[in-house]
Length: 297
Image (cartoon, rainbow, N blue to C red; front, side, top):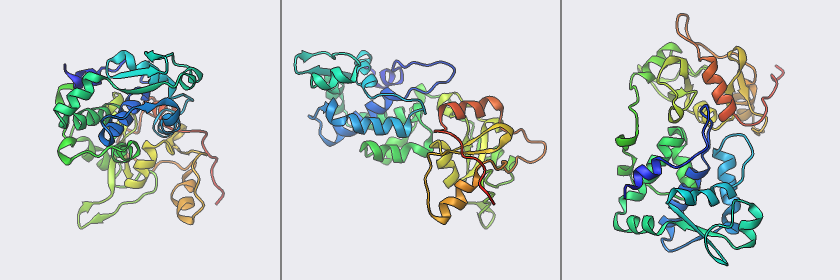
């Protein structure tokens, strides 16, 4: 059985690039727990808050429940659920899962395959990360679910991936004249830019193209906050800062909160700005909460 192909084809509700990472997050969490205890199982009532935190932190801004993937992942052949009454999920209702002592774990065939071929776990995890999340979030997401991946497990699974355009970084950084579009940071070591990255506005994992109209030159801090939904780009190419972000230090106020409603820096004349379609996708699928008003100077 090709577990990578099965992982790549998880059934998800999709429409117009809508993010639905419920099943991938549960599967990543289950892989992390398997790595810790290959014989263990996940009682819904015991892991519900962990799963809810993952969905809140790494899912889209709309409300959701971990009961949905806990029940529906069974249909993909990688997960099983049993209750105090026997095998089979009682349904996707939170009350049903709690009341029946619903417990889930990786499907028996998958557990056997992971025992036979230990490197398979890392390949499945990397595939889930590549298909559903931007690279800036991979390390912290692994930490959040308790996954430890070997360096050799970071290689791409080319059979299920389209190829990235390696020219994008240079094109985007050139368009923004090697300055962060949010704060203007332009650090270099000699002639080499340091701490500057080409960020996809519409994530590459969700068909975001490798071109300037879908890119921003951002410093490492603002790239991470952009992918986490703390920052966004609104109408008129003005910076959005989520009201959900809390920071009381002078640094947090200066480097994040004070950005609210500022115009982007760049791109240079003649370069294409971020397209409205990609900005709209990011606002709907990644940006969390309501945008702060401009801060008083």
